[in-house]
Length: 211
Image 1 (spheres, rainbow, N blue to C red):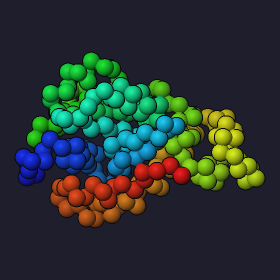
Image 2: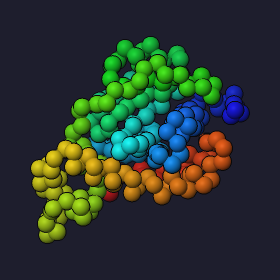
Image 3: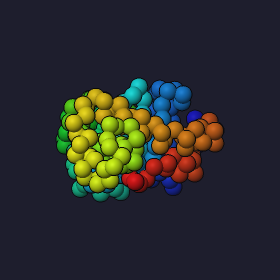
């Protein structure tokens, strides 16, 4: 069992270590990719943790005991435009308040080193092609989509790319995220040891900006 530092056990970073270990144990370390502080969408929001498993994305927002919940509704709505599933991981004191906000997201509580599932996430149906496109850099879109290399205007490139079907665009999005997250995740796995520690988390910060 993981040793618990009482001075850190309520921090968001400590909660990340618990969640990371939980999903590694659930899916297997060779079946998932995990990224930390991943930027996405037109508003350049940052999701606390991002998991890729079975070609689906799981966005995870961490809400520690002292965190302000006023932005949680906006964070949920923006995540639903880009990611397949969303989970809010928090402490028991916040569960009822967050539970009342929406019925689509997963809701997990962390007690010590234990993860308790209050509600499982439902697969969203709000993916927005424009938000997916803004999460990928222009040079990546030009490389993998049928776009004239002579076009340099980012707005025109993204507008033209909206013609692509949502399923194909989602596959390209997953491919892009894998290319960004996999190298750092492999380093993380090699350094991690039996459990994830707070000092391991920065290794996963492989992609914190949109080019």
